[in-house]
Image (cartoon, rainbow, N blue to C red):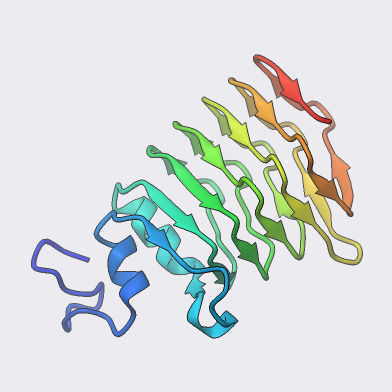
Length: 172
């Protein structure tokens, strides 16, 4: 959204309040009791907000489409708490300059942090991963801070080959 409040296409505000909030850098909170169709957001909206320089702060959303940050540099914090990803997000080869927070978030097709660099912490406590033949890929990733992964339910394979963590790793 530009400074005039127009959607990325330039033809006025979007028809979706969640998209408008994200593209203004505002938190986006959904009621977990609402039906799925009221909690859906497009992965591209999250990407657009981050690339516009805004913190991404979302709770209880259902993310549809592939969230693709492959080869991206993300300067602000990403917080997607208690969300549900229907497609596999791709954070491979990315640089995250702030915290990445996925607390209590579900990933139906795993997730990919192959060769990513996180300059701060990765908060993944309570995450759930699932999917036939899917993985959580942290191969060659570097987390300069800590990796918080308590109470995680990883029902997929996890690839941590050559993973580097600068501080602590928390599992239980």
